[in-house]
Amino acid sequence: MILKHYLIRVIILVILIALAGLLMVWSFTRDSLVMARFTFIMIWLLLIAWLIYYVTKTNRTLKVFMESLRYLDAVRTQKGKGRLFEELDRLYNEVIGIIHKVEVEKEMDRQYFKSIIDHTGTGILSFDDTGNIQTINAACKKLLGIRSLDNIRSLSAIASQLPEILTEMKPGNQKLLRITVNNEIVGLWLKMTEIRVRNKRIRLAAVQNIQHELEEEELDAWQKLIRVLTHEIMNSVTPVNSLTHTMIRMFEHQGKPKSICDLDDATLKNALEGLHSIEKRSHGLIGFVQSYRSLTRIRKPVFNRLDIGDLLMRLASLVKHELQSRRIRLVINMERDNLQLNADEKLVEQVLINLVNNAVYALRNTDDPTIQIAARTDQDGFLLEVMDNGEGIPSEIVSSIFIPFYTTREEGSGIGLSLSRQIMRVHGGSISVRSKPGETTFLLRFPVG
Image (cartoon, rainbow, N blue to C red; front, top):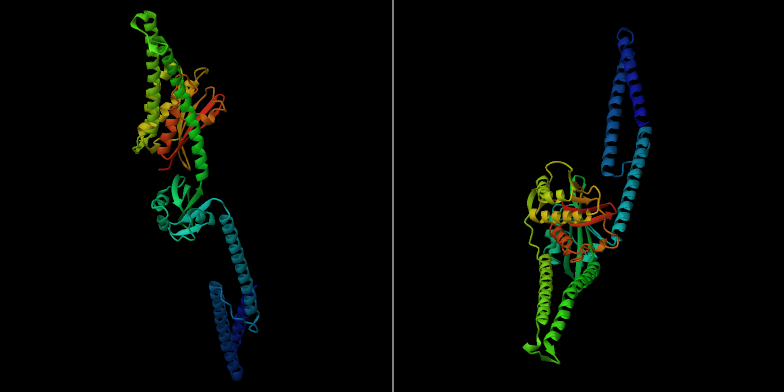
């Protein structure tokens, strides 16, 4: 509407200037119209001046209007200066009203989300590449025992390694850290994500105190381990104790040793058999202890860049003869060529061999037995899957299969899956299982990097 009024006025002025110019030219053809000629010239010049003044003033007014919008200043009222300026005033007020409304709504949204973040039980901490804090909620401040935080470097006063851990964590990584806050041990669980805001990288860390859960899990794990250890030790000690008692009675009478004359060949033979049984059970107990030592003394991984295709081909070569003897088909699927993983080759190979051996046992009564190994990636890291079409793991024992020395196999040691979980943990990854009749999948998840 404003431009319409402006355009109409400019057109009218141009038409009037043109008419005045025509009349001025016509007056020069009449010698008797000297005064009229002078009048037409003055009118023509005045109209030109008026047009210039009008356009200049309008441009000046529009400039003031635009600058007022730019800085959201109060625009000077132009009442009495014409409809154009009154409409500019009205439009300006409307625009300012819309801007203020948007600003108010934006601030309300900000306060709303800030309130949600502050009332979230999980601590939230975000920072930029320089370590400057962008967001920190009340839960995070409470967990860390602080009132305010400007830069993550200040967290070194709480735990010297915490700033370095937060800086080096990659998106999708998780970390468990125990620190002392106000003379109390806190088990911090950290998970890192990354977002981009206005082409600026912001790292977002979820911080949670899981000390209570850790203590509960630790107690439960100890209880399960003690039950298994007790069971294994009693299985070895009980027959040894029984045999020892029997042999004592064979060589003793009324608390005194028998003489050589009282010992016959049958007694000596039975005693020798008993000693062999004791030796056998002792070897079994020593083997059990050595298995325990191997579980608790996993060497530190040596990380190298592994080609997954080569790793799986070597694995296939290692298990080829056993699988062929049992007529088990091995299928390897890779998401793409040249998949690589930063890991310890020997330790990862050991995990895969353990899983393949378990799959072989699960396929003992299966028609068309098949083992599939798949390698792929997702947004959180690298995945290796070992699948079989065996009888599956009963649901009531799925939660126990990773417990050290737990086994349902007579010849099993019960440390294969426990050892595999330990190896995955020292890699910063995890191992999980999904099972149903006819399909069992072990999933190895490695972090990005």
